[in-house]
Amino acid sequence: MKQLIILTAFLFCLGSVEAQTPDSNKTVTTKLKQKSEVKNVWSLNLSFSDNGFGFGATKFFNLSKDVSLNAGIMFSGAKDDREFDQTDIFGNSITPYKVNRLFMMPMINLGMQIRLFREDVTDDMRPFVNFGVTPTAIVYTPFNESFFSSFKYAKARYTVGGYAGIGLDYITTRTSGLSFNLRYYYINLFGEGINSISTAEKKQFGGMYFIFSYNFTR
Image (tube, rainbow, N blue to C red):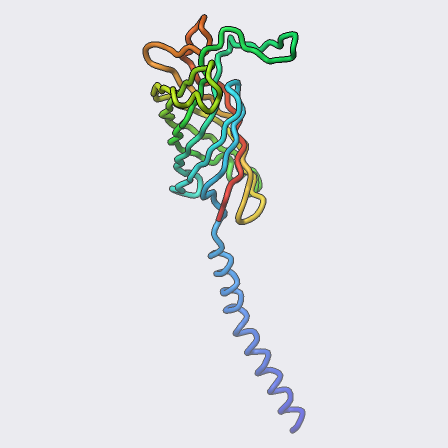
């Protein structure tokens, strides 16, 4: 009789465990499904180009798992390709015929980013293409004034350009990642150009830009 009671209790416990197991698995599966995919929220950017160094920030607006809109701002120096620096006999650096310092500030980037090859690469490596429009202010200050005091005489010209590029997002954690982006900008002044050097005007301010970003994700 005692053995029968023990066997009955054992079978009852076993049945309870088997009945609970599907629900437990379902709960775990639900939690896994609820764990959302990491996406970019905003980023801090550094740019490198023939115009020099720049910096900025970008805000992302995710439309779907592969497509996002972005709005960003960048500040960068600019120079004429025909400029060249020389050093005099006293070790001072001079730029012959230089009349103005040039800056692109700000460059407003309004664009779209599309993730590629989702099914072919690991989730933490995300190749993409991006493109957009770039309203830009070209600010110039007199070179014969000291750097900071020259901004009292600053003037500006305005234009609208565009860009297209390819890049790679690398997700490091659920809250951060890195991005490498190669872009070509077309930024051309309408009408007259600006003299960086006295012997020539500069109208084209675009070119190849390498942009390194630290992304904040969630």
